[in-house]
Length: 241
Image (tube, rainbow, N blue to C red):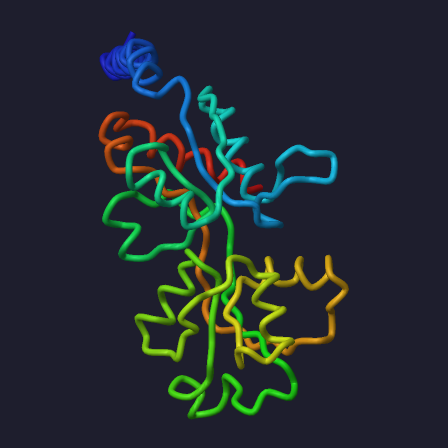
């Protein structure tokens, strides 16, 4: 037996033994169960006619956690409160959320689980449209309460409605009543709302910004289980297929 072959064999056996020994340690570093919060927003996650909760984001997260052997409880709340539960330590994470600096202060974003397109919606009769130079300084705009889009509009100096609605459906109703000139919404969510309410063809759309969606996990939770986030992110690619 050549020395090269013996060296190769020893290295392989050593790697195998280390891997086997590491398995229980790595597995033990994952939580047995976690608590996640979200809101009732199709198509990412919503209550179905049959009564159960399901959606595009929910299915990916369910798949990932199943692969990791981690059980989870889900609490469905208004979106702002769903995030607040993580801030005050009442939940381990929330979804589906795009990145912003405020969320980064208290939680860590996972790998992207879904694509998302922020889009302007407005009536054909709108006097000021997103393509107009005066749009940012003069148009009355809004998103829904707790949305990253709402925070973005305020930070960027848009003329944001002081009391935002609590849902995308309410945004459409405000547009139809001409209380706002334009609404910023997720195209997936808006298309679902328009279809569900038979409002197709009543609004114009102008794509604005790509903002992928992910899961935000509380910083204390990530520190408590340092192997969890990497393991979660690794499985996302498999579950997105």
